[in-house]
Image (cartoon, rainbow, N blue to C red; front, side, top):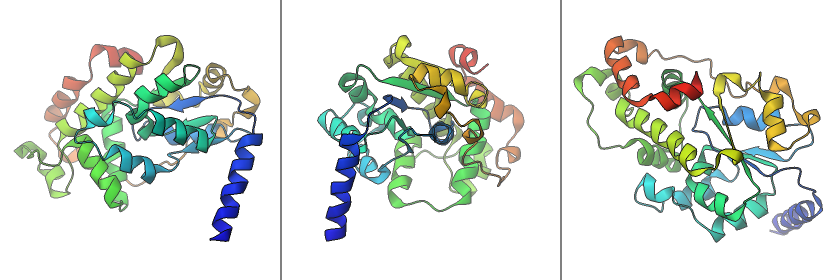
Length: 257
């Protein structure tokens, strides 16, 4: 107990003495490069990927729908942000407190990496299959992708593995990215394709107001998953492409390239 109290005192002292270099929130989806944004700033910058995730997840999961969860949480968000004392907070969960972050921190900058939908879908599915998850994170997947929607016959490979429907995944991908584009003022938001994180690392740092000396270009390919399960390859390619086309609208195509 005393060790825990001593750690809290040390954490508070460190926060009070730290001179913040920036206030940046990465709000991309899972598997869009949020981990890479965290690790590209590992030279003298306070940064973290999905910090205190289960604490924030419990707050998000109190809501009945993903739309309700994404409406913002006011004072609880300020308490969280001040406690963490980060220059760069990179997390898919930040999307669900976006309204509060915008209201509470008018000086904050926001990053939105977007991965092309087919690559995003493959990456998310492979990541889901390669490791076990906690009940909280499983409930969060259900919230985002819908757990009660039956699979059409064309999606039997997804159903056999306990995965969600293509509509469930892709509708969320579309909704998440469009909500950020619509809610965050242009001058406070930098949007870029996931594949360009390394080549645009210094541009990203300038937008964030972080000196380029703090950028580690070798840190922009973090958390790569080399395990491939080939689920999408089991689907009819025309059927898969038709689903992707339904959600990959012209605005997102222009941004991803």
